Image (cartoon, rainbow, N blue to C red; front, side, top):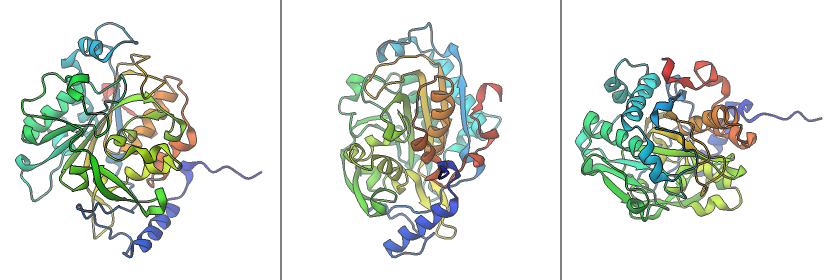
Length: 372
């Protein structure tokens, strides 16, 4: 009987060989693929970052909400959330993620700007989830906006909150409260209409799709991914979190056809999401997507249109989207909630990015920010 190979055991050599083939097809040397923002050139490099970028932190704190109403509306959830506790816990998670003693040091470690820009010229995009009945919560969004504006010095008018597919009536569906004055609810933010090239595995790295315009044109310096914790089809692993959240940044139609898993993985490898690659080393040098949060104050086994079915009172944070989703899917959705996931697809969240389970820090577990 042929031995089944686990995806997290696929060698990094195979990943790099695939990258070399993709580079050859594009007529450039492997490791020298530098993004060209105007056309969105794809990145084909091994994305295994340093240990810190592989870390995922989480916490469970029932005091983040008042009372227990697992099945309820977004508006009711907003009323039940203890905003100051959520905001304090997000600072706690940032400290745990970076190992810094103060929240200010932690945030200055997480967020970095282009070297040729002052903070007051930096453009930030925040991708929220506005599909169905479960959405990003105000307390989480407000904390991220406040950090960017008050701690980092980003101008409020340069913070754009968007969902390119389901954000048309964002303020009506999700009237986010108490954001820093001037932060922009960008709704669909001009629409998903800008062509970008997409790396392998989708269409062997020869495909092109449409992207939200400011990302596609290279106008975004920092991308923040605010996801919720819901179920979805097996082709996406059985869940939708940070990676699937970018179906509101790129044309989602290709994710509902053949090779949907490949498309999900590939759009999250684009320079629009990942960022800049070093010409000298071929490694990810300055990430564009610098923070990923999974809001699991409420969550559901079903989705993406389903309402909440559980009130876990949990938050998760990391910087590398596929690792965040892998860890939360396996250690929270599967092991704690006992919600089924597709193990093969979920394994590709690591292997297709050149990461193995043995690479994961903290004994391969989500770091509990309440114990740090």
